[in-house]
Image (tube, rainbow, N blue to C red; front, side, top):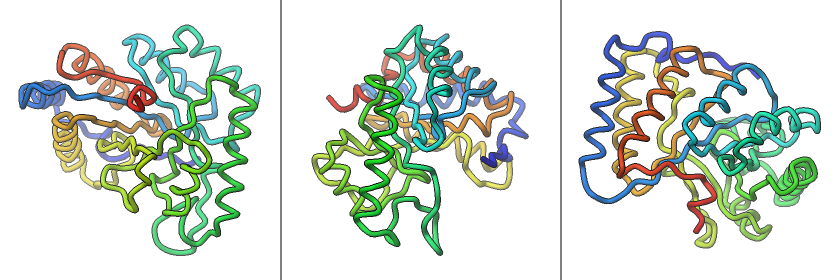
Length: 260
C-alpha cells in the first residue's frame, strides 16, 4: 500500500521535544480529572521492519496498543510472525477488525469501504467474512471492535455492527452518523501520520493543538500509521510515551478496557 511520509515528519522544529513537554504539562495541569489515553495503529497485517519497531516500542514502555487488522491481508504465516513478536505481553494488544480488504466502494466523494453506495447484504457479507477470517486465524486474541477504513461508515453498517455483537466501533472524533446507544465509539482525535497539512510548521502546530485538546478530554485516542513513519516520527512517538508515563493524571489504557 502506498504510504508517503507527511510533511510534518520531514521538518520538525528544532525545539519540538520542549514544545511537546510543555503541551503535555499544560494539559495535565488543566484540571484534576483523569484522561484515558489509548493508541490505535491502522492497516495492520503484514510483518516487517516498521511493524517490528512499533511493537518493540510499545513493549518497551509497557503501553497498550490497539491493532486494527485488515482481514483480507492477514494470512496464517503473517499472523504467526506478528504473534511471535507480541507474545511476550499479550495483555498489551487489542487485535481487532479493520474493514474487510480496505477497498473504496464510493464512486465519488470521500473514500469508504462501508459507505452509502452499498446495500445491506453486501455490507453484512463483508463484515461477517472479515470477522470470520480473523477469528479463524487469530483465535481468542481477536477482540470484536470494528475500525472502518478511512474512519468512515454509514448508518446501516453501524446498525449491523450492533446486531452482529460487536462491542464497539472506533472512528474519528465527531464522526457522523452517530452509532446506536449500545455501540460505543472509541474515537480517535489525534492523527499522527495521515494529516495532509502541506507545511511542516502548520502540521506541527495542528498536531500540538489537537494533542493538548485531546489530553484535556475524559478520553484521548491517538491514531498511528506505521507504514508512514520515518525516524523522526518514531523518535517523537517514543518521547510521547515517555512523557505520558510521567504524568499521573494521564492513564494509558487498552481499547477493550474502555468498554467496561
